[in-house]
Image (cartoon, rainbow, N blue to C red; front, side, top):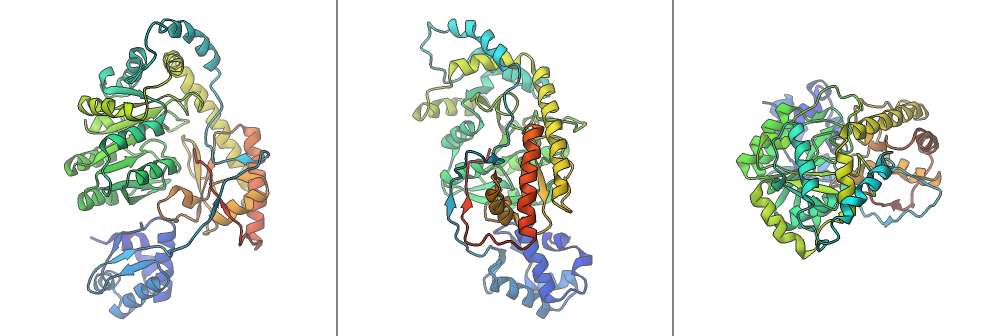
Length: 467
C-alpha cells in the first residue's frame, strides 16, 4: 500500500522529477494542509522504493525540506512534517466602514419577532420559579430531542442540556472531560474558536485534512488507531469552512473506530440545518455510536443574537455536565429559551428561509468571483461559506490588502493549527446579495493589488473573532 505522501504527490508528478522539484511539491502539500504538521513521512529508503528513485535523491529531498524548516529529522529515527518558525504581531480590526467577512452569519429570521411575542406568556408563567435553569426548560429539551428523533436518532429529553450557544457547549464538555496534555484530533481547516478552546484546556492537536471534496477517511482512522486521541472535534455536516458533508458510511466507520480507541467524539452540528440543495440527508453521527457527543445551536438558523445551544449525550455524561456547570455558569437565560421553543415548533419555515437566503448569497459570491481571474467557486450545496482555492499561497497577502479597501477577511491559516492553507480563503455566503456584491468588488481590488506585485510587507495581520 502506498504511503500518504506518495498518494498525495501522485505517481505522474513524481516520475522523473528532480530532488528540488520533489521538495517543492512536498512543500506545497504541507502549506496546503494536505500533509499535516507532525505527520510521520516514509523513511528515505522506503520513499526511494515507492518512487523507484535512488536513495541519494530522497536523501536530497528531505535535506532540502529540512533546510527550509518543513521537516524535522532525527538520525536513525523518523522524519516528520514541520513549519518554519515565524512570528506574527496581531492587531484587532477597528473600522466602522468595513465589511466584515470574518462573521459568517445571517440576520434574524422574519419569524423572530412574532416568536418573541408568543413566548411572553410562557415566560410570565415562570415568574414564580427561581429563574435558574441548569438543565434547560423541559419544553425546549423536548423540542430539541424531537428534532434529533425526526432526523433519525431516537433521543430522550433527559439526554439534552440547553446551553448558551455551541461554543459555550464545547467549553462545558471540555471543562467536564478535559485532560491537560492529552491529544485531540481536529480537522484542518476547522472552526478557529474550537481550536482555541482545546488549546485552553491543554490539548495537543492532531490535524487531519479536509477538502471541499471531503475527508481523508484513511488518515482519520489511522490517526485514531495510532495515536488514540482523548477527544476528536468534527463538523460532519456542511463543514466550516469547506462546506463538505461526510457520508453515512464514513460516519459509521469513524464513529466505530473512535469507540474502539476510547476517543470522545464531539460533533458540532451548528451548520447541520443549512441545506440549500445537497440532495440527500445523512443520519446524525450520534446514530452510529452512543458515545458521540453532539452540540448544536440556534445561531445560524434563527439569529446569532439568540444565544441558545444544546448538548446531546448519554445520561451518565449529562449528569457529569450538570455537576460541572455551576462552577462557571448557572444556566441559560429563560427568555431566549422561551423564544427558541416557539421557533422550533415551525422548523420548515426556518429551514426554508435559511435555504433562500443562502442561495441568494451563494449566487452573489459566484457572480463576484469574476473579479478574481481564474478563481472558481467550488460546489457549495449549503453551509456558511465557500472555500476558495486562490491557486497560489497568497491568502495572507490578500487579507492584508483587503484591509486597505475596507474589507475584513480572515486568511486561510486562521482556520488551521499551524499556519498552513495559504492558498485558501473563506468567503461567507450569508450576507445579503447587495452587501456581498460590494464585498466582492473590494476583494477584487485587493486581489488586483496583490497580483500586480503590490507589497503588504511590514503590515500587521488583523485578528478578529471568526464566526
